[in-house]
Image (cartoon, rainbow, N blue to C red; front, side, top):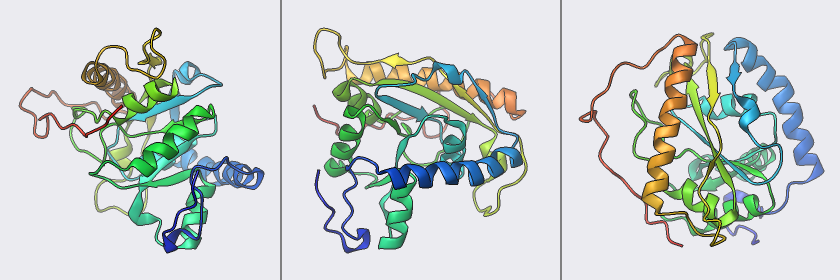
Length: 253
């Protein structure tokens, strides 16, 4: 673990174990604000029991709206950590606030070893981590080819991956909308996916591409189910859907 030397972060160690005060702050925030959000959007969760109640878990949601992270936070009963874009950790106050909620920064579009190390430490302590496998917010009915980071992290830390399809969130807060609309949202959790090779601890069973493809298709099933239940079913898509081209990050073992 290492303290950040970025002055915007106020000397925070993002990989440090969470304190009692941080846990209390997040529980209070989830009770008040998560409860208000859940009522506004008539939040429903499907197959939540599939999430292990202990041990390292990677929650891998679909991502179609800026409100997806608060939705996942309201849907998960177990405490979780999450990656957030570096730009929102803009000063010591906001950094402390986001860390209190379980966040830590990641630089998008590059191999951010610091964030990967933080994520690995979080999982190896047996915590739960939210990772958007599509990367940034996407559009359309088809889950985009997922980055391999979720698979790499899960194998390295001996964690399972639970896909989470979020249905209806785009209707709650489309691009350009700042205030959530009272629309129904459903989060469907898929069954846990094991990516670690049982004969080689810390290594991926098969190839990263194979496991990433498995995650993509499992997330598609969860996303389609959630969209139907939310009353916003996905339209039909075809192999030439815009943005379907493969895109992989340089994750290394």
